Amino acid sequence: MPQENQPTPSPRAGKRKKIKIGKVWGVVKIAIATAIAAFFAVLFLAPIVLTITNSFMSSSEISANYGSVFAVNENGGKVYIAEKVNLKFIPDIVSFSQYITVLLKSPDYLLKFWNSVILVGPIVLFQLTVATLAAYGFARYSGKLRSIIFFSYIILMLMPYQVTLVPNYLVADWLNILDSYKAIWLPGIFSPFAVFLLTKFMKRIPYSVIEAAQIDGAGEWQIFRRICLPLCKGALCSAAILVFIDYWNMVEQPLILLSDAETHPLSVFLSKINAGEVGLAFAVATIYMVPSLLVFLYGEEYLVDGITYQGGIKG
Image (cartoon, rainbow, N blue to C red; front, side, top):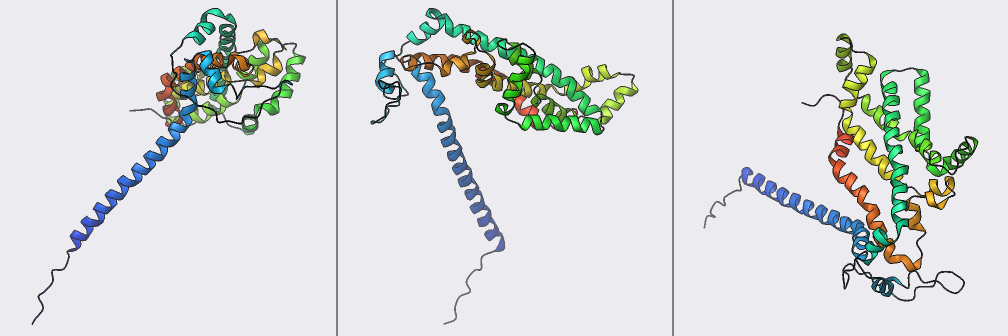
């Protein structure tokens, strides 16, 4: 018997099938990437959540859960942990005793908090002031001397602070400003990081905009104040956020340059809390995180804009 002619699949149907498989595979890849990102997000946020929730535990509950971690022997050394540590994210009974002690009963913690504000505030303000002026000079002018100085800024920026700590100590001792806030302020104010960031940003401003201002009779100060600063608003906010977070968490500088413990910031004081004050450490750490979180949440849009914006005038 003659065989019936089998219908041949059309090329269009094959294309549709490939497109459908491609869409499904794209959805699967997005789902896998989202799951991986969510896993790492939970992993990184777990210590913060643990700190906040544990700050509402009572002292007895914290001792029962983490007492073995901070236990010491008769010689003052650490004790080997023979059992698993009980990590609890939800307290049995919500207690505000730690916060009452920190905010009302013990003034030391608030004193250290305001020490942090006094140390960090002037650094952020004056570092941005110096950086905007220096960055404008680096962006507007070129030459061999400018390149050498800017290259020196980059070398200093790449060095970790621990490398320049001894020279800073010697200079502070020579200036007779050791054991004063000036020993912390001056190296921070003249830090090269903000200069580098703002210089790269200002160089992206189209020269035609500056040239048009010069044709209209604008001087250097007017160009700087009315053109460069408004266009660099995102970069200024980004630099302010990064500088604030960096110096808000400083530990080495106060330990080396400030011998008086009364002038130390809260970041140093947190590292010295002993085993009997673990609950207070959770509460103080939570309070200490609040300014950084507020600054980041308020300036998140500026931070992203300052990093991704390529210069020029927005439409």
